[in-house]
Length: 618
Image (cartoon, rainbow, N blue to C red):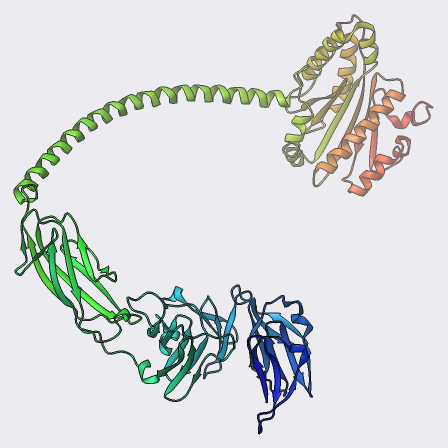
């Protein structure tokens, strides 16, 4: 037989027959033992203020997990479904092999655990020192505390007794209906009241003690330790109390003077005190009252412990005062006790005064409304005029913005010097241009570079060079068709994208001849090198355009190498794939002369006849 003693007396082994002390464990000397339990594995567990110990085969050892007192004292031990649960002053832990884990609950993982037990259906009960009782169904926790309407939050003992749950704590003993735990709201009654909420309390401090066994229940009665001795509770007290008796109306006081029936008060008796009670031969702290003065109160009012109702500055009229009572923790109220009262009206409380006052207020409101309406109408007209004026101004500004935006858009697409389209125009309109070309099945790109333009800038200055560019752009525009797209490509380079190639060679020849005959701002002749490429294709995309432009560039540079002042036209006769187009771009121009897919034209004669000349392709 093992005895664990409080007050730091340690742990002893006694003979069960002779009650003689056999052994004392020196390792637990001067240690307070809070809980002793024998597990299903025949191990004896000891919860102490200095940690957790286990006894097996005659020896006792401390579990290192609880050393250092990091969880405070171990207050309660309980084996639930083959697993040891450890209740400490700093939370609830469960056994996990040789280790222990805190429960996953925001309150239970850190609060003082004061009790553990089990309900008849296998659910676990965990009592705390200040957060009420928790019930665990294997998945979720249900909390019972003052937040659910209970009078106390500490638990030292709990037991299921049929349809009742007996709960003991430092603030007394109460009974909770088991059915209300499942379906709510909680129905409870105080059997021993130490809560301090009633006018008279039983000062027995139930249920105290540092050990884990703070109560025991039998079939008809339960016992609890208190500072004043043993508390004996009969289970018949757990039955639902009889309906509360009907309350009594004692007296009415007006302006500090008692009024006798019939209760007909003068106009100046405006401050009332209505006193009520109940013929109950028991603990009155377990009752609660509510009252209502019909004709003045819209809803019921809860009474205080003084059991009276106070009203001040009551207007005249007829009233009915009613009061009800019930047992705390139970929903049913008693029958109402009703008393009729009346008070004379002051002159300003009479019907004719109210009617005159209402008419006067109505007339005043109508007058204010008419004045206000007139003011609002005038203000509305002024606002409408301002809005119309402002709208006109905004429309004018918006129109100016539209024109400015249109001009900015046009300017962004045009070269600021020559007025021709620029590269930005091409990036915005290339897809549309290629769609038009696709309808005609051929794409023609002309690349023009003014010969020796740098010399003009160096000799005559950039201002003269700009005049030459403007004059060249004007001449170029006259030699192109309306549907052609003319761009200043950059510097002295210009690009023409033609949607058809009819007469392209004649156009280039005329342009070369006109350049020679035109009078230019610098007073000298001007020539240009022109590269042309015509490309048939099934699907005209950006890749096809870039390839055609590169071929025109190749032709233009060949003209430069031939001595400038001329043109070369590369005519692709059949649609080429992207791969074939890349091969053609990379091939030397002389190798393309013999390519059956390509025909090359020159500004003076067909390039085939010039193949023997050293300045072409050499």
